[in-house]
Image (cartoon, rainbow, N blue to C red):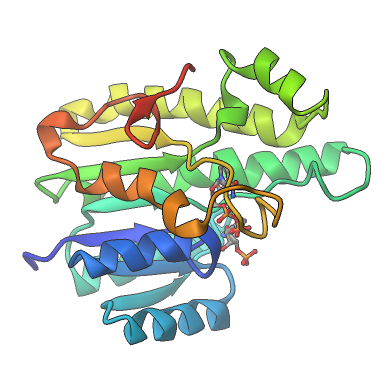
Length: 241
Ligand SMILES: NC(=O)c1ccc[n+]([C@@H]2O[C@H](COP(=O)([O-])OP(=O)(O)OC[C@H]3O[C@@H](n4cnc5c(N)ncnc54)[C@H](OP(=O)(O)O)[C@@H]3O)[C@@H](O)[C@H]2O)c1
């Protein structure tokens, strides 16, 4: 088994996932780029290589059990363990200009809740082989029950029923995974990146992607004794659930 740290990031072909891969790679992690589009994953690996990052692409639609099984086999055969899993892939269908529908709600939950659950379940045996395993669920302040009223006012009453409720579910999943996996020495927590300029965050967002990646990168690289289990973090600060 390799002594290098191996980090798999889902949805890492662009946006925050790609930048997290870049920043972790520059700190010496070998990164596995999860991408549902094979070509986009390979293009991301080429970009990362130009920055001196050791990266590998796996085809990973997080709602597809066959992709998850293949990705697990790839990491098992190549590295024999996984140190870091960032459940980053996510969607919002609340801002596409058309009314919310049951189908859009289901798609959102599939990508934002079922996906992170089943990807984590698939990688548990490999995470258990790491001596410092960490799972970071990329969540959002929009899923915080403690912030919903303030955010409602700030967003002018714009409702994000699909995205916000899916991230609230992801927050609960984070606590349950943390409780369940502590005995296996797999540390789990959730991150809010801030409002960041990406395809999801839009150009109106105030934060650049380099800063948006810092919350997850900080959680991955901090000393294990300081790791905030079962919490929602933004740049080192705990946010209300
Ligand atoms: N940007 C923000 O302001 C903000 C704020 C709070 C939280 N977040 C969270 O941060 C994470 C990354 O968002 P981002 O802003 O970087 O968005 P983004 O630029 O739209 O990137 C999203 C990534 O997720 C992938 N993805 C979506 N559904 C997937 C699925 N079912 N299976 C596999 N990959 C899938 C996308 O793949 P394709 O390229 O194939 O579409 C893309 O690689 C998300 O979980 C988001 O909720 C973002």
